Amino acid sequence: MQDNFLHIGTIQFYHEYFVKNEPYLFDMRVQNETNKDLLNLNIILKPFDSGFHILAGDIDLLENEWKPLKFHFFIRDPLFLSYTELGDFSPQKNLIFLSNRLDFSSINGNVLKTHEEDFVGKSNISIIHSGKLLTEDEIRDQDPKIADEAGNSITVTQIDNQNNILNEGNYSISLNSNNNNRYLFPKAFFKLPNLVFSLYPDKLFEHYQSNKPVLYQVKFKSLSTKWRYIFTDPSFKKFASLGIKDIKKDSYPFIEKDLLLNGLGTVRLFESKESIKLKDSYSGDFQLIENPDSEPKKRNIILKTLPSASPDLIYHEDSSSKDIYSHIFI
Image (cartoon, rainbow, N blue to C red; front, side):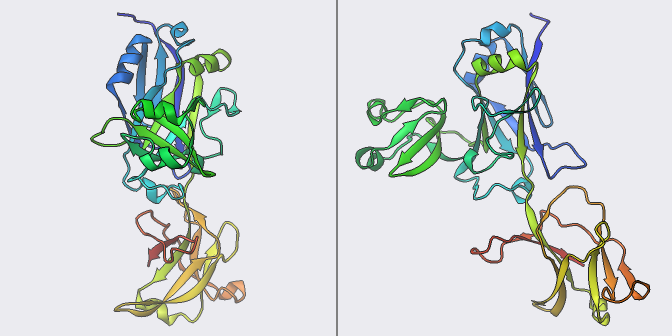
């Protein structure tokens, strides 16, 4: 058995939400075919909480190997979608597709991007298709333009001749000027992944030549919400004037409103003027102040530290509104 392996690359997940802890977002599963390919290429993987390292016994074996290694990831944290900005992503119909074949510029030295924007976004979301890539109506009537994830064009005739059976992968589809990405699973899966990373060995070899070792960075954006402090304790009704102060900026970035709650009647609510990013660590920047508009000596601190918003309590009040709210009950 070979003892010496060279560390040639790492795939690592980052998330804005995590300030205090390293993210442990996904569980990885390697399919049987990819396991065979790893063995043939003399590659071993060393997983860690936020990704995995790639070690090669003979890097030259990768040079002309164009067949991608497919790594399937499953969301581990049940709150992941509550604190992550992913637009209209739905785990029942979508997955996140990433690849090292996309030649985006390096971020810094050996750090390479795996998505076009700064964070995983709309261009990385694919519609899941099982069994067939196109419907019979699409093949017959709409003259679709199709390209595989490597950028190779595929004709409808080629698909029809294969009984619409293609390899697992991400396909770009253009139908009547409407474009979308579809990720095809030719065979049924017991559980479909939430994210797929296609690692092309030839690209890894190429990147390694100038970036040793390669770090493929996957970055997720934290969701921003409007924070609402809802004061349900009747004792707060005795204060004629209250305000929430940002002690770092010496400002009052919240607007007071009334909220009608069943069983409690009208309660005080303070809503942030701007959306605030959700974080796993909060330094206690907000205080509840009495008489915020008066001279400093007449102001009193009612609550020295207000709690932060949690991904557990997020609301979309109106489907037509872009605003998302975090409710914090006091």
